[in-house]
Image: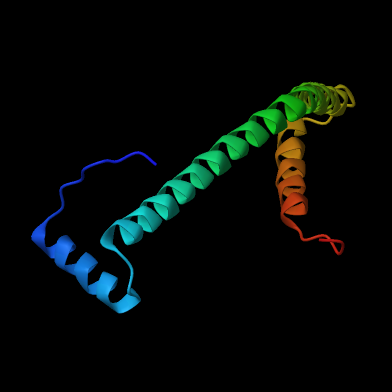
Length: 122
């Protein structure tokens, strides 16, 4: 074993002496155990942090293509929905209805209410 010298406050020193007397161990033995326990715990926490970060990075790498694909699908769906909306308004106007925009606004309010409804499966 290697020898080291550590300076502690008077309060810590008296606590170590009391603990030494109660356990009937040397102060060196107690300090050694405390250091080992602290260092072991610190190493374990550092290891957990490293593992956690590695898992998070792996999950990001795996999920990134799926997220990108879903974003592209959502963009395509939004374009398709907007195209359908404007085509419907144009069709209503072409049929001679002069209130096509009013019909569109009513349909939009109904669609928003429908989306807010709770589904039985939720």
